[in-house]
Image 1: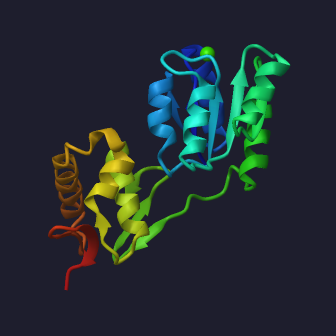
Image 2 (image 1 turned 45 degrees about the horizontal axis):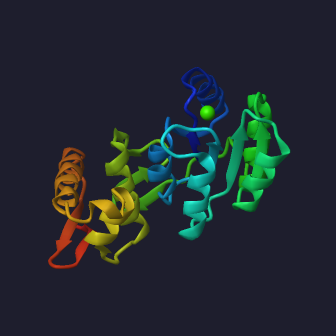
Length: 220
Ligand code: CA
């Protein structure tokens, strides 16, 4: 299970993240509302744990925006104010569950498992292509570590099989729509990924389909 945890109180975030990781849950942490929203749009999370009171943008605003955009990732709202009003607002905005602070991490894990409906300790799902095995949870390909963006891009390439992934699609999903002008970012990251695949001596390469995008190919 991979979750996004949006929480501005660093000590709490560290403690909760530590315990979640110990029970086999991969956690990406965002410490303010803007970063939370940017990450929440990624199609890689099994659930989002969202604090309400956050700098830059509240958890309720993030929830409203992602639900309006059709993102259905399950959301658990957190709030220090264990007020009924927050709970109602959260659930009205499309939250799936609500946990009042302070909470026990055990309780959070139980809620996450109920929401995602699969055990936290399951083996991660490996994606395979040719001689490559990619693990999106640990962000590794044949054991080599990838950065967050490299991993997101590679996940799209693996999931599309032999179909071409459009450059604009990659840009919008990895960097967000606001970055559409900077389309050389994709090329730069493709060169990082190609370098890593070469270092693995893989027979798989990332092919550029001129004017369209990219796809994985096995070298003959
Ligand atoms: Ca807070």
